[in-house]
Length: 211
Image (tube, rainbow, N blue to C red; front, top):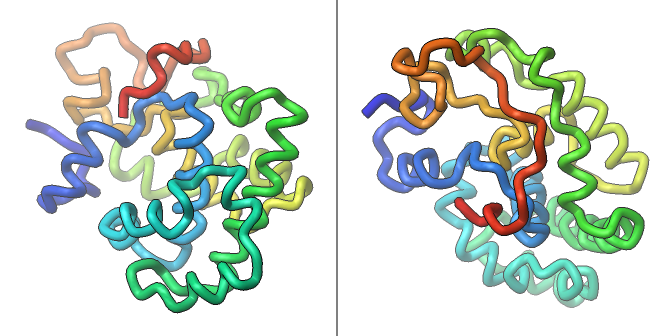
């Protein structure tokens, strides 16, 4: 089995790579959870967050936007005392703030997915080949920079361009499995498929929960 190099051999990371990372997601609940967890990852490894993900879900009411938006200073104090999660005041307060901003965005756009999937890049703008070297040198893209800027203008926090590009990769807005990865859909057995492209057609909601 050929995989992207970054998941290594840790069973939890391999399962995440094989069954979640890069598969298109249009479920608002999961989109909100992921953008929050990417914010918590800042300065840390994703594996650290992945190992704590169930604890984060418990601490943040399953990342239910409406419930998290009602968190108060008392909840912040509670979460700062929870050793199961990353106890960073700024990131905790950011998650609560972003839940409130997500409600505003949902009211404006109808669904978070309708907003986020607007930022899917044109396949023609993507690298012809996706390799380890390509990805190492591509921590941000014009689309992730523009999306980050728009979110920050709307009051979101911990949504810098690098964080947002990681979010786009994980949620399938881009297909960044390397060409040799068996999960990329671009293995050498598939002749004539341009590397690094994905249809810009938004996935249907019925098929969204594949991760």
